Length: 196
Image (tube, rainbow, N blue to C red; front, side, top):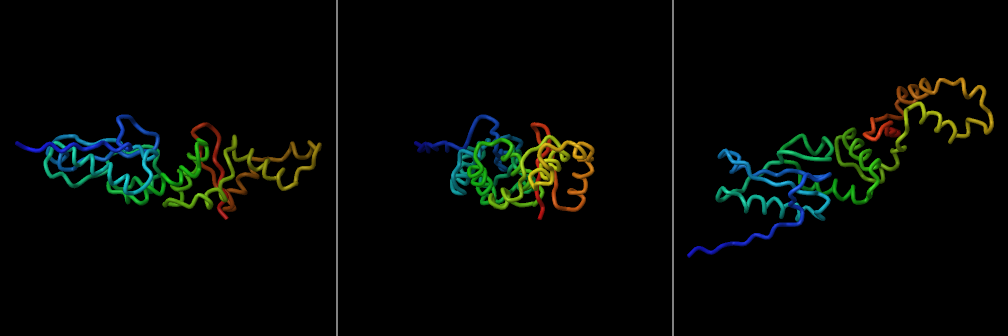
């Protein structure tokens, strides 16, 4: 009689497409013409060990005996620096998850953080991100106006000549000068980042 090994499914292995996640496939099954893998919800894991446990579960439940190699075949909500390879560093995946936990549930900030990591080509420190992030604005020209106002350059109650200023040109100067960049926001408008 053969012993049956019961494998407990880790909480991170899910049956749905997570907002922040990766699909890990068993390469032994893949190389034999079978699809076997699962989505891992990165927001359900708390460490690199948890992530490795999810991958180990996927391999242990493979229809191919002795499966030991995996690859990330799909992803959701991850920055480009984590998706350029099928074998991302699990420490980087966990670090991204930790950073999102620190950022919280604000959808604009989460999207902006992903875009900022894309721009930098690495998972950045949340404090450095917050120092650079200037929020979501309707446009670059709206940000230029708000910046001028915040700097006290627009006197209260004065409409002329402020109403005649080309704020789009003012934004272009901020962007061309290399002080600020923008990325399109999925909810409309742009995310603005200070570069210096």
